[in-house]
Length: 181
Image (cartoon, rainbow, N blue to C red):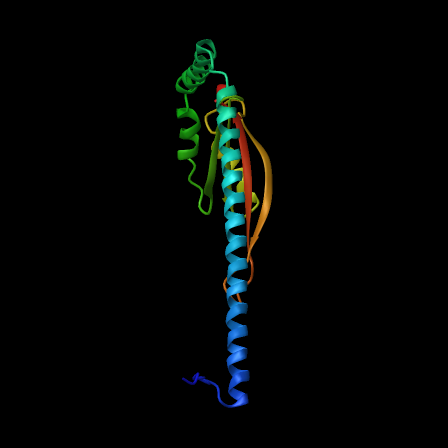
């Protein structure tokens, strides 16, 4: 019996093509294998870091002392006294002055109430500097002394619509002690 040889690539150029594809396949397998190995290593490193972080978090939670009941009651007492002081404060006088202010072109921008310093601060926007004295007079109407003080005035320049000139307005801040109102 005679041995049979099968030659799948009879021509020498086909042998080169098959050799290229075999080498390329081996290269792709090698690259993907190394990528999978790197991914497995990175996954293991991330798992170790997560485990260490959990251990640190657990140790931090164990070392935190429980607050004492006295600390809770002191904090609650402070909050309660601040709340009581806020509720005792008569804000009607401050808001009455603001509500009665009716000057054309004047807009109330903000009201800030600082109970710890016993101060109310208001900020108005107006278009002419002469309106600041009108605002001061309106705020001080009905008082023999002047509880409201003008703290500052500053210009604000806003650009108008396209082609229009810039709009200039003024902002003024007034302050008053709540106990003087």
